Length: 349
Image (cartoon, rainbow, N blue to C red; front, side):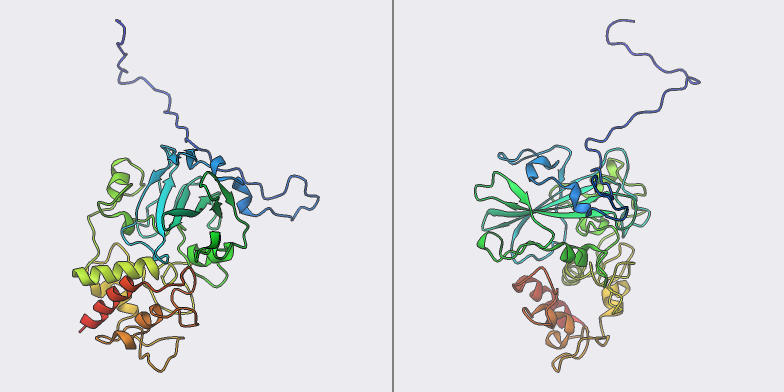
């Protein structure tokens, strides 16, 4: 054979199995402390995170803000309101194991998956959050937050208690307890089993910036690609409202094993819904009475044609009291979101 020629395998020739190596292995997590003298002393899962963000997998050059090629940016179709903070998001998906999408509405990520989200106020970096799947069990996730220094050359891991008014801004770094209330595993419910709230079929099913659902399908990153094309049902007004409720309310109000058990409200938007009337928002909110919330101005969860008498819109319009929704993660009204829900309810027959 000449230089550069390659041998074509014969039909009956057995080739060795292809080897695969992830760019980053899962963080090593030991349940017991190395110097523990007691068998039942457990380290918190967050012990897997380095003290400095520069020692994580996110950056190859933190001063130059050069992100590792294996850590890919993405943008959800319907973003969560965070008091107007600027946000960037990245994900690392282990190369050797696809995402389990046998349930297209609730993905199961391989061990070693990491999500990063950066928050900035007026163009200045404040916080970068990370979630990592550290084991196969449903609650094997670690949550951490890093606080950026003044010249943005480094960020340091914050304690599990969180930090209010970070860097003298109105931005609060959440406690671990608050992370669990939104993402899952909180004692009183809330969250989605995938824990990756903004990285889902519904959120990536558009031609957005960064990684999309179509790119995941083409690159064989999903065990079960969507059987057919899908989209959010309804008019532009209905799509905007259903998407907003999905992102801002559905992470707690959903029918999954982690959803809030106290009320039968489901605002998570499943991909199988072909009409507005089939959505959880329509079936559990429109024309339905409130279950726990009581106020003299409110007549039901969604009262057709009457936004101000609808608990969903009314509670979105509240801050700093027991009526506020969402109850955590925001101190400022989302005027754009309020208008989206107002227009939807006002147009309901």
